[in-house]
Amino acid sequence: MENKKRNKIILELTCELLEKMNFEIEKAAAEDIAGEEKQVLVSIQVQNPAVLIGFKGRNLAAIQLVLSLMVKNKLDEWVRVLLDVNNYRGEQKTRLEEMTLALAEKAIATGKPVVMATMSSYERRLCHMVLAERKDLTSESEGEGEDRHLVIKPKV
Image 1 (tube, helix red, strand yellow):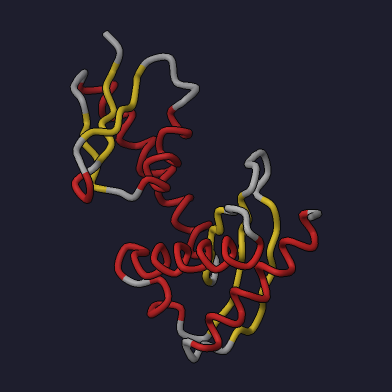
Image 2 (cartoon, rainbow, N blue to C red):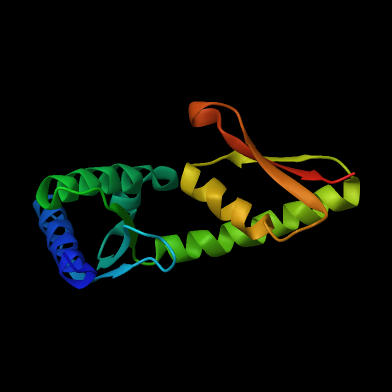
């Protein structure tokens, strides 16, 4: 199945699920994530995004999982669905990038590792990507489960 048709089905499933949850969707779009195979970004606009997003994006993560399972059931293939509500993901990415760069500078200035707060795998991945080109430090994920976090370490 071509991606355009697949994305249309994913968008329809997303709208159907959110409407069943009593959310009125103002705008919606689905597109492939550049450079990522079988990953689709679904962007939606709703009146009250806080309930959908939840604390630290936990509701959003749960809804994404349900959507991925619905897509697997409908298309008989795994497609990772990344749901963005009212540009939460874009704003979150900007905040994480800025925080990661500031903490990287702190690690370099002090010569000591800097421990970041616990984060989802998506958030940690964004931080690792921000630091990937840096030759003067490394980043590692540490901890288990919900305590998993990122540590920025200056190279000696």
